[in-house]
Each structure stands twice: as structure tokens, then as C-alpha cells.
Image (cartoon, rainbow, N blue to C red; front, top):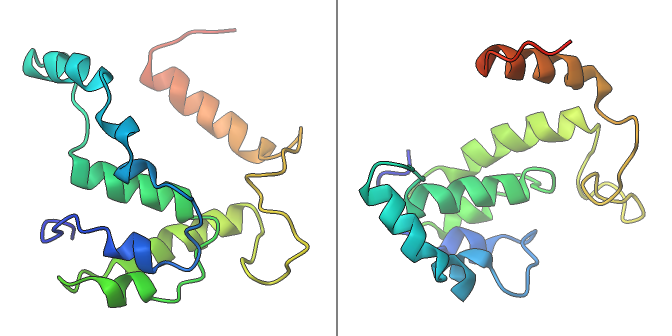
Length: 141
């Protein structure tokens, strides 16, 4: 899906939900001194990270999944006609369902990621713990 992406970030610029004053993916933080260590580790096959292109889209998807209103502006802005809104809408729908959140419905309702609830997401905890323990062969009691 993203193989035709030219990494222009038009989808981010067109998004009415994106509000960061400085996008991490366009900041110096992404290209810091740590890159030297990352590059060295990558050359030695010690660490594999997603490409800049994939990292951008995964990061954006994570950042926008709770707030996306599926307006399609990201897709309209794409010079390569990549159906990014389709993927973002699917991920957003599932994320919003978990939090029972309807973005844009009420200005008074806080974003789920801003408000921490102590007992939140308990129904997912056992499933995640079980998957994690089997994946790492952990035998905790």
C-alpha cells in the first residue's frame, strides 16, 4: 500500500486533527546523534527498524487513531493517490471502539489518551499477559 509513497507528508499537513506545533517526523529529533548508534547496530544486523517511510506512517497512525474522523483529507492530499484514509479509518474505528469514543461528538469530552483511568482496559490485560508470556516463554506465577 505505501510502496508508492514519496514521503512528502502531505497527508499530515492536510489532516484537520493533526495539531502538533512541530511534527516529530520533520524535527531534528528524528535525526539525532542516536542515529549514529542506530546505523552502527543496523549495519551489524543487531537491530532492525522500520524504514523512515514505514516509521512515519505507523507513527502517524498511532498518533491519529483515536481522533481520526475519516474525512479523507489525507487521501485527497496524496499526490500518489494512496488510499491512506482507508487504512487510517479501519485502525481508528477499532481504537475508538475500544475506548467507546466518538471523535468530534462533544468538545467537553476529553480524549481517552489524555485521561487515565486506573481500572481501564482490564478486559484486555489477561489476553495481553497470556500472549506476552507465551511469546517470551516466561513462566511467572
